[in-house]
Image 1 (cartoon, rainbow, N blue to C red):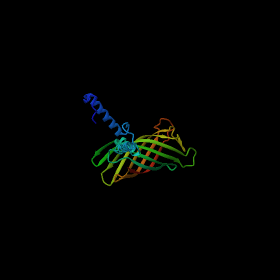
Image 2: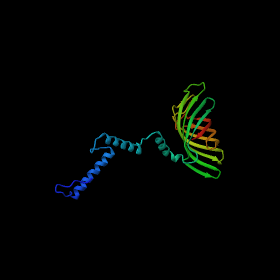
Image 3: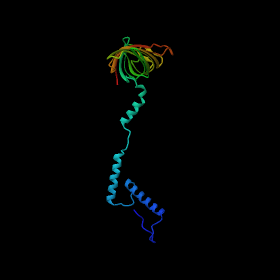
Image 4: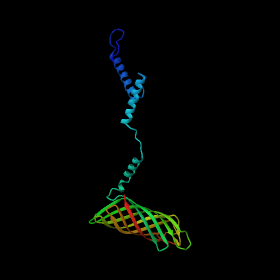
Length: 239
């Protein structure tokens, strides 16, 4: 666009020409963006502006945080625990103490926080969370059930890298019972310490099966401290 000459027939000064050109360019850019178009309000220009706006939305779609993004963030947060070959796993634990006490529960085992290679033996330290239900099946007085939640630090050893790998493990933990008495056993405190020993076989890094011994007591913080000793079957799967 060229500015009109002044009344004297001479072109306007360069400053006025630059201002006019800048104003025209600004009007064009704003009208193309679809935000404001004072140069024309005709239906054709409005349709063209809407088409441009739709095109910008397709090229630059609106970003929203959905479930996949949340899961990706969670996986990134857990990356330090799952960096080794075996990832986290879940296990079913079923067992009994004497003949009158039963336990059934689930454990969530995270990937190794520490690992070492001792020749054919591979060692790792894994955190584990456990949640279980205890039942008293005897005829004596006292509450017949309680719930338990706890955390364990587990030293895990396995031999070889074949499809079937024998393993052994030992762990120490802390636990919280929902009550202090179960049947004829008086634990005195809801807070309990736990010790665990296990033997079993891992299957091609997909799962494992074994036997586990667990002991819960309050380490004589208060008395009586009857404690409980459990012999259990463990069936687990890695994911």
